[in-house]
Amino acid sequence: MIPPGKPNHVTLACRCKAGRGRPFPVGPVLVHFPAMNNLSQKRILLGVCGGVAAYKSAELVRRLRADGALVRVVMTAAASEFITARTFQALTGEPVFSGWSDDRTGMDHIELARWADRILIAPATADSLARLAHGRADDLLAAVCLASEAPLMVAPAMNRAMWRHAATRDNVELLRRRGVQICGPADGEQACGEVGPGRMLEPQVLAQSLSDAFSSALLGGLKVVITAGPTREPLDPVRFLSNRSSGKMGYAIARAAREAGASVELVSGPVLLDAPPGVQRIMVESGREMLAAVLERMTDCDLFIATAAVADYRPARPAQQKIKKQAADTSLQLEPVTDILATVAALDHRPFCVGFAAETEQLEQYAQKKRLHKGVELIAANRVGNGRGFESDDNELLLVWEGGTCWLPKESKTRLAHQLIERVASLYAQRSNQPISSEYHAKHSA
Ligand code: PMT
Image (cartoon, rainbow, N blue to C red; front, side, top):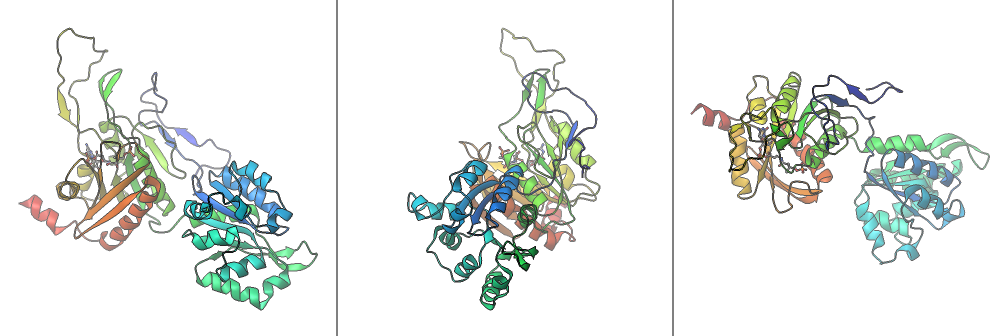
């Protein structure tokens, strides 16, 4: 980690300079270490109930926004006695829902329930805990909680005697058994002048709990190297061969792997995306540079995921000077680019390897062939072309491994990446200590 107060970009060595029209760093020059938090672009629905601690919810929203989360607020009627909807509207930049009258389509509560990645109720009063425990749906917040499949966290805030009351204890226990995460309360001086348990946890503690809730230990302790984006194969100093990869799929996977507890190094071709939080990014340009950057990182790598759209061919003799327009037709001689994935899979001490297959037809047949040909444990195949796969925000994947397939239907690349990482973690756990498939050896020793 970068110590506090230090810049989060470290320039290691500069082999090439960014040229005109290139808004990103190029060459294996820049290692990017953004501070670790898991909240960037996460959709947090904050429920605010009627209690003195509601004033702290405004600071909580400010922190979540600063950490990159998207926040929407649903207030109960009682909450408006303590803080106004306008405060939250200003802090979130989103409309605030404070009752059924704000459910303009009659389906807004369902839309909110689906939108949320996670729901946090802070402050959660004794009454709101009772309503949640009993599955009530007669106010907007309770209805959203009932309709949502997103994990629910509550930060209780109430008088110490109310917190200790058997009814509240039973409600809290019931919620806990249903998987609701209970955050706090803290002990201390209360608004009513009494001292004891019942204070809402401080905003920074709640923001950290939310961030932690998005990380899992699925890949805890593992080093993962991921390739992403396109490569550029130079024709001359100003032209290159490339493709439409935006890097979105690979970056989403890097982020999901980081959130699953791995230490992640992302070897990226030229893209316009920021490095995911906590991920070490190495920018490269050509397939040759990508291969070198990957191989440098293989000594202690546990898992390699090749998402990059690496060029299969490059100009055999790139011109040293700009190629001049010629009167007659011209032709280009190409030579193959080394297959990075197959090279890694053939190393003596190889990591668990996951490849992608970009196909326009016969998805499963080609995916199976690639898995065997490249000698990898898993292939994630996607259809490409006509707006699919490349550049789009969503995708669908067919996962193919020895003895199994699994279809991941159309979803945002962010969510698909998490599903892929779950499957990879499970296959890794089963197979990391086993030699590569007998199927592969049979084929290649034939
Ligand atoms: O970046 P996005 O816009 O989000 O688009 C995502 C994507 C469509 C690029 C991604 O989902 C994807 O399919 N990536 C793989 C693209 C590709 O090159 O597929 P392929 O079938 O040609 O290659 C098979 C595998 O070999 C891939 O894992 C590829 O990274 C790897 N490969 C290929 C050639 C090469 N020289 N070296 C490699 O490592």
